[in-house]
Length: 287
Ligand SMILES: NC(=O)c1ccc[n+]([C@@H]2O[C@H](COP(=O)([O-])OP(=O)(O)OC[C@H]3O[C@@H](n4cnc5c(N)ncnc54)[C@H](OP(=O)(O)O)[C@@H]3O)[C@@H](O)[C@H]2O)c1
Image (tube, rainbow, N blue to C red; front, side):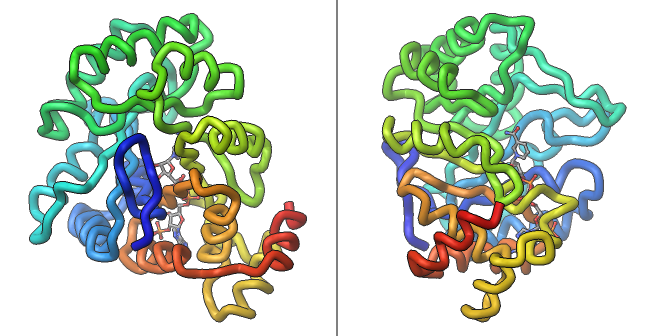
């Protein structure tokens, strides 16, 4: 697969989002492992996860453990696979998502993620979501300390606005390598952060790029131009969506979620789908 940069690393230009394999509606483990292995076979080398991707209160890190097992059981070489995890979000088990961006929590969460992933240092550790109760610089300061301690190799931020991205850049310097924000045909407001990342030369990872787990299948019926362009190329509207994002800037690396081999295999083909300027213009206008 063609690659793009995250810090000093090259990763396949389409990543795999792990969330659908661990939250509501998740498949059995066998299907999840088959999905991750299909992604690896297709050249995916970025897998996005988080300690909060789990269902019940007593299974924090379900997704991280699943990914660690899938990598351990893979026949091929996994040395170039970047597992990007996150801390700072929690799921108490009642379906809600809560936050804790305190340095103490981030330190403990990182130690727990290290154990579950079975690595000496986490390749990319992302602060999941700004916590209104904790000054942003304190949360990002915790990432700087984790970098200094060698527990994480690179740092990223998620759900950050432009001011927060600049602030994180000031604190972390070139060790801030990625921003992960929501971006899809239905959700365009993070285009400003995408452009900032392109100017700063750091990766922009669109989350829920297909509109989210429950809406991804309807992308073509909700946004007609995506279905029309898909028909012209004889591909899926989801593939068109990912190719459209890749064309926005060389720093964009979408992380579509998947819980079936078929969907991630379809998504990775977006890397080779060339859209014309006219088509890209129609898709831009289809919000
Ligand atoms: N940082 C954050 O706050 C945050 C928030 C949400 C998500 N994320 C990350 O972003 C990732 C992606 O977001 P998401 O999973 O919420 O939503 P998404 O990627 O927009 O949609 C995921 C769904 O799309 C379907 N799909 C994938 N490729 C497809 C294709 N080529 N054709 C048809 N359907 C396809 C999958 O179906 P099947 O399940 O049937 O395979 C999957 O359930 C997550 O997995 C997670 O890693 C981060």
